[in-house]
Structures are given as structure tokens and as C-alpha cells.
Length: 432
Image (cartoon, rainbow, N blue to C red; front, side, top):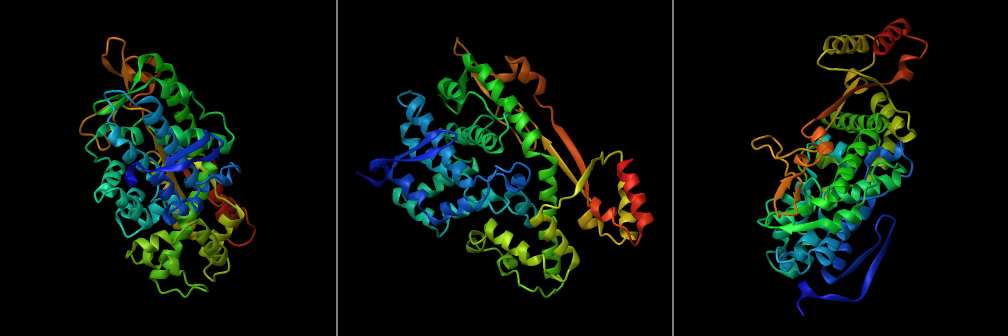
């Protein structure tokens, strides 16, 4: 028996709150889970700063990755197996891609990426193709197997059906994180009938389609996603924590560039400050490292780094007001000038943050981010784009919702002492 087809003597199971059990029979999958690069995902939270709002949101990229693997395993072993449109030789590559799709996430994922101009998918591919334990496991299957898995994650794999199972508008990734994030945050929005959706999925030449009888379950899934984004993922208090986290890293980077002498040198960040990042530097960072530095930076001489670190560690977050940057740009410039006069650096303490989401879109060639639509399989074997059959989905198709908030430290503006009149003026403008 080759390594690619090797099975464990006894099936391994992970008890899971979302899928009840996650089943592993393939030796390759079991070996990948045991690699140090995959185990690192235990130390990266799935929802970044959201735990500061929803206290149960402590779950990791590790258990989400297992969940995505399990959904894909059910697709290929329970739904697609034996169907002429499904190529069984693709089974292992899609299982590995599902398991490893988030391998390159850094600590506090998107905030960290934004500061240092990184791309977690690019690092996922570097880990898969680099001198890593993950690469060693994949290479035992075949010399070209790591590249196959990498190409699925990069969405360049020749079999688009395989890509769509992990990256589309109704894929295993989204189906897991919506349910998992709803479970751990305690909200009701992210629940939908996944069992029904899986049962009506069908493989087609270059995509996965949904039998038309399952359309209402898909409508529920799309509305669940819409609600989760605005009630959880874009929660204004979580965004406040992310703003502060981002500004801590910006400040530390700026201080390093000016030759500031830290009490504890940020050696783990030096490669990121210098933009000379080796894979080993990236893998050495996790959220426990960042939180340790934030604790240390609370005692730094620099008042901005010290204050921002204290705010994040002790959850003393910024307040916010709604703002329309297109209409209120003069107000924003005025506030920046008043902040400077009051001795408060607007670069770190007056922050415009925007969130935007497009809940569903059909294929629009030539646009910056083309989205493969969800297709229904009609009783006459016709393939029809979802919004042509669903009034609910049609009503939100192509409609991007954007939200802008201005974050500021209200506690500083309420302090008695110097510049009291000026601070009062700032508050009146902000609250006016």
C-alpha cells in the first residue's frame, strides 16, 4: 500500500462542538495534524480581538481547520463518491488543502497583516512548499503533491471543481466558520441547515452546484452570513480593539525606525520592521508572543506605546462615532488640528475605520474581485444562477454595505487639567 492510500489501523476522532466528531482514517491527514506548523494554529485565535466582546470566542484556527477538513471529507466520502462527475483521484489533494488552507495565518490575523503588508495565503503556500514538516509529509505522497495542494489554495489548480469546494460563495470554509463562530460567540445568527446543503450538493465539471430543492437552505445560509458579518465580525467594539492593536504595532515599528531603545528589545518583530522576513521568523510568532510584548510595553518610557499597550491588555478601548468621510472630511481635518493643539497625536488617537461586505454577487467579468456565483441544478438538468430563482438573494445581490466609524479615547478628553476647554470643544464636535 502506498503512503497516499495508507489508512490508520484504527480511526481517530476529535470531539467537536459543531460537527460532533471529526473523523481521520488517512495516514497523511493524521501526520499533517501532528506537524509543528499545524500545531501552531492552536496558538492563533480564529476571531482575533472578538474575544474582548464575546467572551466565549477563544477558539483557534486549529479547530476551524479541522472543521473545514471534516466538511470536505463528508462531501467526498458521503455525497460525491461514486458519482461520474467526481474524480476520486482528487480526494486526497482536496482533503489536504481543506486541512491546510489557513496554515499561514499570523497572530491576530488581519490586523497583523495590515500593519506589515503581509498575505496569509502567500505564507500558507510558503509553508507548504518550504523546508517544513508539512512539506515533508506532502512530499511523501509524490514529489509534485505539495505544489498541487498549494495550487488549490491559490485557486490556480486546474480542476476548478476542487477549488470551489474550499473557496467559493458556498464552500466548506464558510460553512464551518459561520457555525463555529456562532457557537463560540453565543449568537443565533450563524446557524443554518448544513446537513440539508450537503445532501443536495452535486459535483459538476468545474464547480459544485446545489439541487434546486435545496434553494431555501442556501437562502438561509446567505442571510446567516450577512447577519454574522454585521453583528459579530464587524462589531464596533471588536473593531476598537483591532484599531488599538494596529496602532501598537505601528508605534513599535516607528520607534524602532528612529533608534528608540526599548526596555525589552522586540527581537521577534525585527525581521518584520526590516521587511526581511524569513519563514522561520513568521512561524515563531503567535498570539502568546504578541501579548507578552504588550505586557512588557506597558512599562516603556514612550507614553504612546505604553498607553496603547495598557489599553489593549486591560480592555480600556476607544469610543466611536458614526462618520461619513465623503461628507465629513472638513470635520475630520478640524478634529485632527484640535487634537494636535490639545497635545493628543491624531495618528494614534483619532482613527477612521471602515468595514465593507458584499453578501452575495454573481459573476461580473473584469471586476477587481470576480466571484463565482452559486448555481442551482434544476429538475430539467439546467444550471441556473441562484439570484434568478431566489427573490431573497436577488434583493441583496451586488449590494455592498459599507460602514465608517471614527475611534477616539473619550477618557482622555474628559480629563480635568490642561487644555480642558479645548478637549470639551473636541467632544462637542464628536458628539454633535
